[in-house]
Length: 223
Image: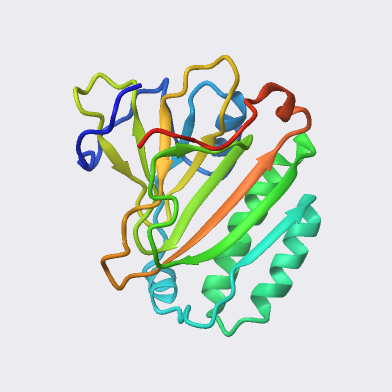
């Protein structure tokens, strides 16, 4: 397996190898593309209004307690809405998070999956090594701060590029698969040396029966 030799961000506008990552134009397409498993990563490069971006940037996360939920889609969404409404957050923030989660659940509901959601404030280098999770499909978006980094270790580059999801981009990462070459790995961006904090949404979609076709054991790391 190739080592990651350099930290370089891919140039803006570069189109990834479609066997590794595919670009999408919305959440419904993103979820459908992830479910087809033709590539290990589906990406939606999106932007929010300046008002929404400012609302996320101005959040006070000092007393925020991470939200962790599991269950069926309706259960997760109802509980998330209740928890978000109890916070002293801008309505723009609350409505955007709910809109994202609702759209993901609506687009994937026909699979009758189990969902695991985390909305977390991150101020350290957690998950600092490139890895692939032991889950079915993991969707990640960063609402505040630097986005998730990913790398294609099977690219033609002599030193694989470290690529960044921008703030508000959404990535759908395939988890580990038995009998399939693993090429796309991701990590949290290094921020511990700064005073920055991130607000990150992670939503796992676990379709019925996926475990029997997945590798058992710990998360797979490469560096």
